[in-house]
Image 1 (cartoon, rainbow, N blue to C red):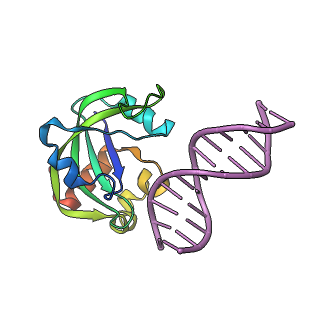
Image 2 (cartoon, rainbow, N blue to C red):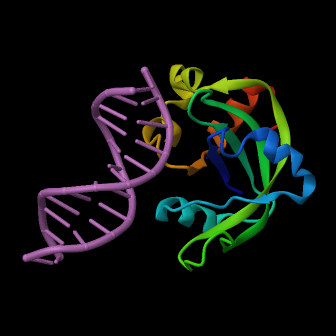
Length: 139
DNA sequence: GCCAACGTTGGC
DNA sequence: GCCAACGTTGGC
């Protein structure tokens, strides 16, 4: 069981947009980066991830669940690009900001801190537990 | 709005 | 196959 983090600019695709899709979920399309794509290929249905708002907000705002394994990205004809489908699971009672993550020594090694540009990234079990605790989320 | 970091592209 | 140029991302 692995944990993940999905990053999005709220002006493009926000947590509210994701919630609005309900249990049907939505494709995590638009990823044009091999590393991020490869992580999506590793994802299994039922695995969980954080939904992170980049840009102005910079905070983990909720959890999502993978509901379809990697498949071709319907938004492009380029066969290189694939995506998974995800649905919103739970909103954070209290969003966990990037500043908080940076200040917490237990989270200092998160990819979010180390490689801020990667849009789909793995999260360790420990990081998952700590961020859930800070956010008031069910782990 | 700026700029650093990074990834990708294309010429050689 | 290397590397310079370029484009994009995202934090500040």
